[in-house]
Length: 207
Image (cartoon, rainbow, N blue to C red; front, side, top):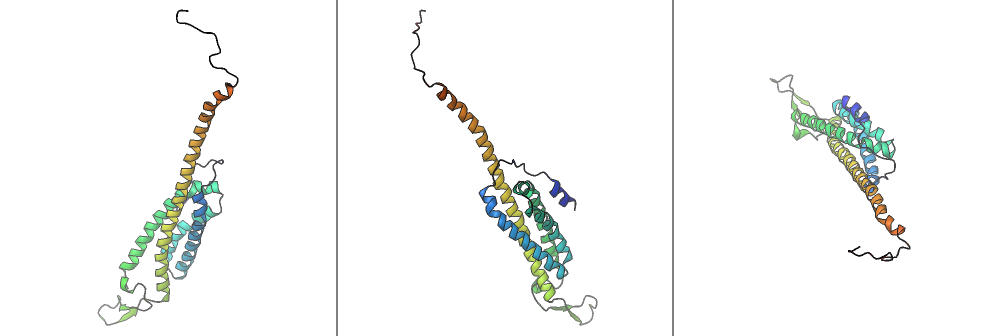
C-alpha cells in the first residue's frame, strides 16, 4: 500500500505542455490498455478460483494502471515510471507465489490436471488418497501463469513509453537550444544588406 501511494504521488518525469507525444508512445498506448484489461480479467478469475493472494498482487498493479488510462498524456507520462517500477515489483511477488504453488502438493507434475490423487497428509499411515485437482485449481493456476506474463508486459510497455517520451523531451530541449543559436548566426546577414565591402577610406600602416 505504501508503494502504491508512492507511485501515485511520485512526480515522475517532467513533461512540458509544448512537447508533443512521441510516435512510439501513441503506438504503445493501445497495447498498454489491452494489458490492463487483460490484468483485470485475470484478477477476476483469480478471485473466483480462490487465489486471493495472487489476486491482491495483481490488484496492486491494476489500480494505478487503471487510473493511468483515464489521465491525459501529460499526467500519463509523469506516472509511467512509477507504474513500471510497481509492476516490476509485483512481477517478482507473483513469481514467488507461482514457485510456492509448484512446491506444494499436488506438485508441478499435476499443476495443469483436472484430477490428481495424492496421499492424505492428515492420514499419512493409511492408504487414503484425496483429489487435490479440479477445474477451479486448473483455471486458477493458468490465471497465475498469465498474471506473470501480463505483469512483465505492463512493466515493459510502460517503461518503453516513458523512454520514448524522455528521448522526445531531449530532442525538444536540443532544438530549443539550437534554434536561438541559428538565429544569432543568421542575424548579421540581414543587417549587412546594402553594405559594400572595401567601400571605406584606405588606411596604410604608416598612418
